[in-house]
Image (cartoon, rainbow over all chains, first blue to last red):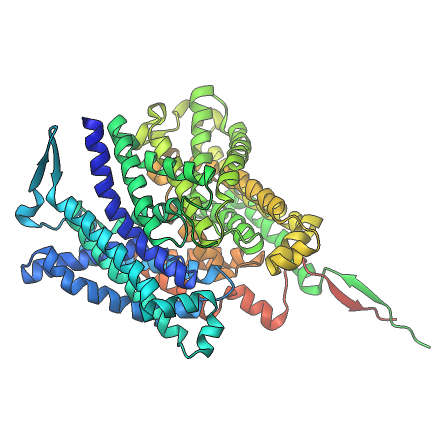
Length: 287
Length: 338
């Protein structure tokens, strides 16, 4: 029964990983940018949530109403102010600039909030659980996060394939110059893509902060989880990130069940295994 | 009728002067145990080891187009191999260092086979995952202290040299020798046939492929050589520290972030860049390190500013303006005087 429990909890954890991955996958799909600071931005969102909950005395879930638009605004400004200048044939500038950004965010957070682990409290919701037959319990909060993750991914999928914004995303992704000729301002479209990516990061950050304790140094670890979920699921496939996240979450929980020290290692090994047998991921959409 | 004849030469006046100056500086540095204090020698050793890491990262990213943010995998691996060989087999560090290098190159073969499936930026994060796997795996080895790490046994350190001063001089010379070895290997590699292929790949993968250059094989070769030399450098780093732990050995900040900043600030894709970068980095560090995290913030801002405003770094910008080259790598046509 422990095993079934580990798998169920792993699936729910996978929802959070899918949220880490979705933003990463989106901007890679639109502008082939891999944002090394992605994990640190998740942690930034968590700290933003913490500041809002303590300042206004509201629940972290209410704080989302502020965190998400603020993160989206940061994304738009970041893209238009800095990242657009780095895009081009050469992959080095975006990589190194976001790497520098990661160091800046980490140390900036360290300066403001110190290295102490923090946590956000969601009140009674945190301990509420639903009893299932066979002595299994599912936490209401993890379940809710999973449902939100599925909804966010469905929303992104809808935006990408059924809205005019998504059409703009796909157009600049296919051929930037032609899209520009058709009247799209690619700098603006990229800005919107990053804004959307960081809006998702905002949700992911607050959820992370409710679920576990966090400190300024954990960003790179979250980036790696998100990245692994993207690769396992298949590049460019938004639903794939959900499957990737679930595979990662389940592997980690099974690893932890065998030996607590193997939790993270098991996730990485699952990723390397997929890389070895299906280098383009399980359900790839783009090369 | 006068005929003008042309010849092709790699050396220039600047490179000849640089060679003489370089030999003089090297002689001065070799003699450091006689003129420098203990603290200075430690600082210099650290600079040499960072120089060697920076040159190696530059070879990977600047010449072979393999942007890795996971070189700490090999730094830590080399360090751990030194400790393992010394503790379990009683092998002297002087022998264990090259062995760590060979083992580092060997482990790089399966690693490369796996992560070469990823391209560009995804390759970069893939290397990071490998480093994490190494860190978590070494944390599981209880004979090497598990998560909290272990120290090099005193007996092994004593065996290295007769006195403390002699031991310190030895580790200093080893660090200097490592930097010289790395520079020499990269210089020789870049002047060879394979170096020409690498430079061609750097400039255009498509064009070089159409000339029959096997891109995969060249990149694989560079990755494995770099891993071996990085592991040797890692062994030396932890020989100086005398203590190793998974978090210190596989630190992305210490062994990759700083190294990238050094190369970016100095000038990526040039041999001179990392040398300039190391000097600038250590000047900044020695003057600003009291600021703690603010220092890292400044470093991040400087790196982003350089990347956006002068992507070729300090040396690259100078080279573009003056054509100056201290290491004679590129060929030029010279008009011979009659």
